[in-house]
Length: 416
Image 1 (cartoon, helix red, strand yellow):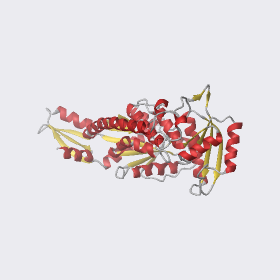
Image 2 (cartoon, helix red, strand yellow; image 1 turned 45 degrees about the vertical axis):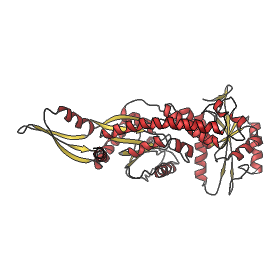
Image 3 (tube, helix red, strand yellow; image 1 turned 90 degrees about the horizontal axis):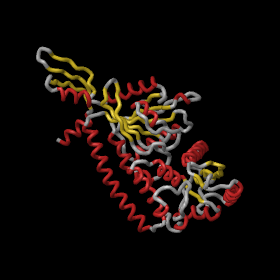
């Protein structure tokens, strides 16, 4: 938890609802902002909202609402104001001068959480790149604040001493980070190619943040991973092998959770990581079926896939957390499975669905293997789905029947 002195920061959330946003959507976005604030270690003390046809160019809200915010900040000992709406540098500066405390927007809050969650070298570099990208247009006129040595939500990341630098230094730092990320990406590409050439069936976990992907990964692979009821609990991608029907020719990769209006800076910085999705044989789109905004979450994920131009990877929608449903549920995406990641029987049903979908997109084969080719037999058993092995006693060979991945076969053929 991030603290100011000895106490968690006291947060006031503000937001303007325009005509483009329905009451339900606005309520969901505010609830999500509160959850993000909690994840960052803050305490939401109060809310101030306003309906307007358009956002006020200078102060975000109208004069009356601004006075209400000023009064609440003083009366409730507010340390930080977080805006649901994206703030321009000039609006951000105006609000801080008028209110007398720090003001950040949702984008900066998400960047802050990513900085807190990144564990790998690549993840830290990607977040740092995104934060510099965000700060570059805001450093002019905010140098004193950005250089302040202090803690609190919205101040994590590249480091306070670096934030004292001017635009030229930030650009040079971004260039250095980009070069290092290119080296990391080369390593990632080599790892990816080894996985592709191995002929395993690669499964990708995608979904809105906190949909239950990490729990699903743990239950499928029977290995511990970081699981917590927080937004963006998992940031760095993780790949593990798992078995279905006794076959270990499956890998599963967890990916960063998506969110409504994921900051452009993060999409750009994490593009190489998100590229992992493109090379999957099957995507498990995990949806929290118990969430009131699950349909909005679905569309957010599918929209980002569309932005990444990922169109041809098969998708199985996994409606998770059905054990938490309080009413009837109607699926909207197909094929799908309704389940709870905490139910072992549901995990087995999911494995059966994965098996069927992989076979549906796989290539059947028959192969003769001589007794002295034990290594070849083991290779097929490890990297393809062998459904039958029969020994022909008359001609003394093994006949294998099974399925293999045609996509990887094509890639291998291209390399030959």
